[in-house]
Image (cartoon, rainbow, N blue to C red; front, side):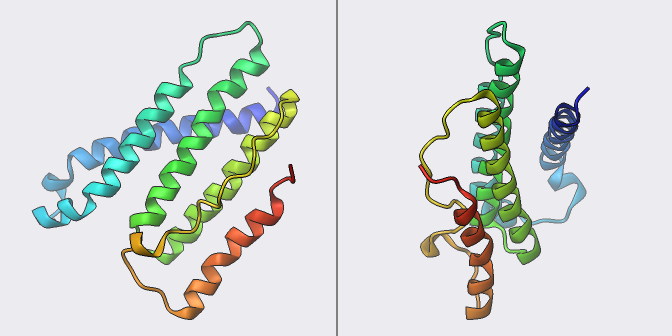
Length: 167
């Protein structure tokens, strides 16, 4: 088993277990926590967006085998990595923990790099660069940031833009 395959397998398994655990926990929230109904209502947009990302990821991972193990592997892994990006973007929209926001930004950068690496390994062209998803539109942000936090939160996005290959 190659190191890339092993690490990808571990990532996929860990992610699946996390999704299952989070789903089970999310269904049991009222029984285990003294959270108000309005607290759940406030979280509803995040849960809805996150659930949509997971459903899309799982559906897109169900690829029809082509007979090419390499291509089939990549075709299954691309939506898996994109799902992680979509979930991280959802957290950036609704989360308020600065440490977790930085982790979400790192997830986005790392997953985009892995997507590019897998495409290049197959000799596939890279898609055109998209807008940086780590920046949240100010009208969508729940919390306000000090000027220092705003500057520091842009650093990973700027670094990510520099790492993207030119078309």
